[in-house]
Length: 117
Image (tube, rainbow, N blue to C red; front, side, top):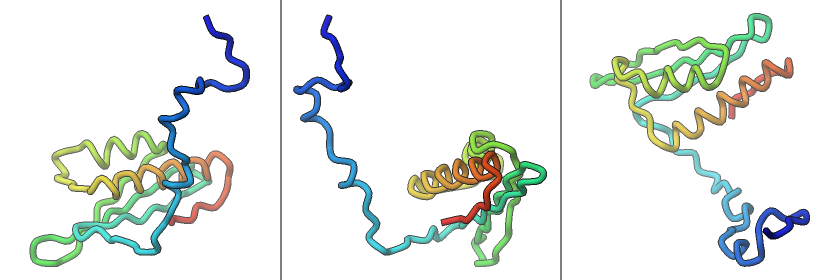
């Protein structure tokens, strides 16, 4: 058994790593979802996260769906897995939503103001 001294990865394993800075870039362009968008707000007093999804129907009219929950996990499940709501979200949008929901949950825990990116 090999003893680990500070490094978890062995030398030959490190060649498979890609420097994380290569992925931490933003090209400055924002791609909006053509089907819907989300507005996230928090209520630190009641400890709730509110997610309002604004959707466009086939006629181009807008309607909204309001979700309310206390954890990012709960809201993610409701928004992305309830098929009866017929919600379609791109992978990029789902990842963004997950990050923002975690951030909103942390702001409630830390009693901070939530600002959506």
